[in-house]
Length: 198
Length: 137
Image: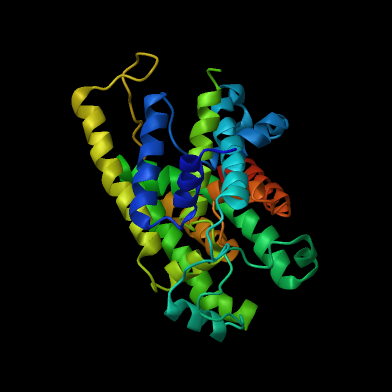
């Protein structure tokens, strides 16, 4: 039998985490990696994966000692395990729900999602193989992935590398990048979404 | 054993972003509509504590586990690559509701279709690397 206190602990961490738990945890993760002599940045893994597949033969950008970046692939692998644990073993009592605001539920309804308040799923139904045969699914997964991969490397980092690591180190470049992230995100959400989802 | 510590950091990262709902398309949508403080709270509190952490590291010349002084490389400050690249990244971030960290986390939660997202992201990264000399930086 699992001891009572372990079950209680699992129940405790299975609740949705408020921002003031998640933010400090992310700062802690950044600190741990700095303490290990590394820098927190997830999108660098895409470059490592390209290099590991031999992209160095085609572009100099991928000619670097990618094996020295193996640690970052392990962080990514850990994130995969973490996602598995959270989704399978730390489910909150009301299920995998996104606890978004009433205003968000309303704007989602305007966009054509039939959600009631308190019933917005955590994950949209278009993260599915079948969705690849719909225009929306194809845009979200293939075009979305392409833009994320291209943009992150062009900008030299993503949310973890620039918004967290770079801003914490007061890097001007990272501030520009975050301005770019938000400009792009706002343009997509407010100008392009009505065309895709409408 | 020495490498397993990175896996543990990754697990911690995965659970944190999953349990705080930062991996949710709907949370990203909400953020870009300014309809909740939640995502801003996560990012801003991480940065606020991060700034204190980095200042502390610099002040006490903290050494890493391997005994070397921790240094953080300054990024170059020419704005072009950050604004152009950042804008393109932002388009994808809002469209897919996923940035690179959450992609790995969601793959682990069972959304195997995101392998296609990963391949698309690698294609994007590769094309950037290939055409890099022709892009303004």
